[in-house]
Image (cartoon, rainbow, N blue to C red):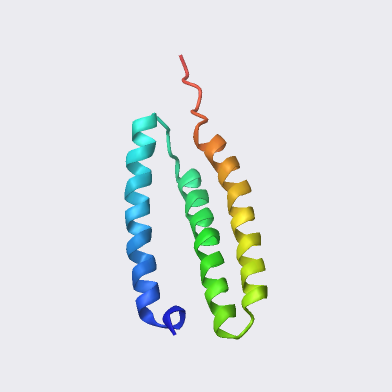
Length: 98
């Protein structure tokens, strides 16, 4: 199945690199200061977001499509809530010491 093979993880890694490069350009354009812990939180958010798709596909393969879809929706809702909080956190710039 697609989600069990190495192709899924290869594509997931390629998409991650593209998302990370796009996020870096987006953050620079908006003037956000990205520290190491903000970057780590963004990576954790991306893992939660991508794992919601992975669990959905796994449960479809295990013949539990309804449970997979519900878990997918819970994962997307969690990603949405955490994404809004992360967006607000990223927009906070440290105060300059003058």
